[in-house]
Amino acid sequence: SQKIEQNSEALNIQEGKTATLTCNYTNYSPAYLQWYRQDPGRGPVFLLLIRENEKEKRKERLKVTFDTTLKQSLFHITASQPADSATYLCALGGNAGNMLTFGGGTRLMVKP
Amino acid sequence: ETGVTQTPRHLVMGMTNKKSLKCEQHLGHNAMYWYKQSAKKPLELMFVYSLEERVENNSVPSRFSPECPNSSHLFLHLHTLQPEDSALYLCASSQEAGSEALSGGVKLFFGSGTQLSVL
Image 1 (cartoon, rainbow over the protein chains, first blue to last red):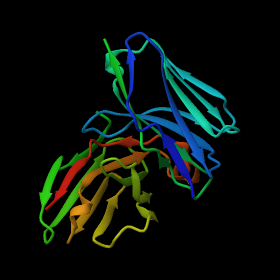
Image 2 (image 1 turned 60 degrees about the vertical axis):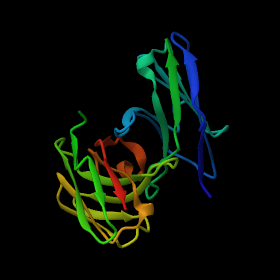
Image 3 (image 1 turned 180 degrees about the horizontal axis):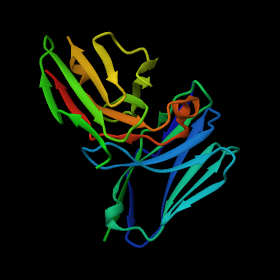
């Protein structure tokens, strides 16, 4: 069955460092991969979308890579700040008929 | 704010009650979604409406009944729920409603959710 794995343990890093979150998937050939941020008691907020034919995408301090051979996406936040502390969700979308499916999320804690 | 408003924010109901969750989007989008988020579990897609027609129903129990009277409003009617239905219910919308959108090719705009507790 299709599976999306994100590290369920919280990632703790020091302010100013680069945070790297991982999204691995099995039994899936996604056409799209999205990353969302979710704060406690709020709905997810869209961050980035990357397509299967794109290797990397950047937006300000964010960078996403998509390796369809390794079946993995990496999400980087450079120069991290305490305000970046949140849960980050990856989501995969397939071709027509395959709805967006979310991973369980990884909680990031950036300490000052 | 994201332009997607959900009410109420919190709801406590007994198993014999009937209640409704409401979602309104002010973005002019053409597709709307209901997701369920339980503690320690990923978001689960429940229903999708594209241009006011239901296009997806992920084997959701009949005690959950969606309604989409127009492209801006979405309801989730609840009746005879179980304690395991306690969760955060999230509404989302997307601009496009075609096959690319429904397969994850466009971004979703989420509301803040309704935290539901079933006693």
